[in-house]
Image 1 (cartoon, rainbow, N blue to C red):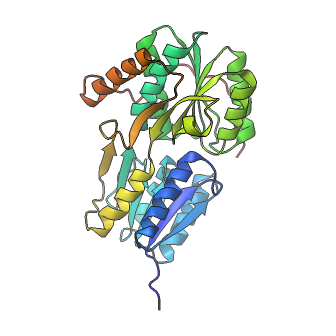
Image 2 (image 1 turned 180 degrees about the horizontal axis):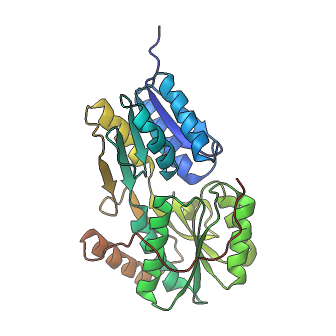
Image 3 (image 1 turned 180 degrees about the vertical axis):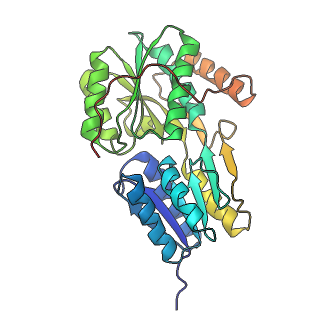
Length: 311
């Protein structure tokens, strides 16, 4: 009889929507092409309790390693891990500290800070915006870094920032961007997933530029995207599975990678960005890698009153 896969990969949200989950799917498929036996599962429930229940069912089915993609896995994994001490858990973009959980984090905030620098360099109105969905730790850190980057260029720049409560709602994302545009924002940094098409449509209607994240949106939608804060979140998935199979799994560990690995984290700019601005971005990037510029993880300023997703 064929061996039952003992590794479960988990993604959250509607199947096959959004660049963040696309990066996760690519990573799982790459592992499968290597001959590694694993099953991939989609969990569409948004409530943490329902997500935890779905993960518990996978544990009860006999898996040995569960790899959850994204900070959305923090609460459900943190909830069930103590009840399954013999199981191993890994979270990409996670922050759970437990004896049987290993976390792998791509420092999206590094490229997010560069996105803020670029936004401040390009704005003509003096108002730039940030939009994200779920209020998870990677998103919060990315927002803090974006604001920091913008204020490195202009301490008085107006930054509109908020979380709408859903990564995957295009109509809601479009409504939020419409609100930002009405306030004069002409550059948007959007850290969303399945809701991206709505944000793109709104940017087109209002004629403003967007900075994407995770994947290279300048190649996909060059008329809208002036840059993309690249962060290959699939790196954490690949590292987790390879570490486990090699006997290197360490519970309670946190493995991070940032701009020092440009093949994983960088800011991809379009041809619309001039050479002088690119040089400025390179200088800031070097300062981060050298430890001369500390990237902030917390933002304590005001938030824009965005419409919210309904659970």
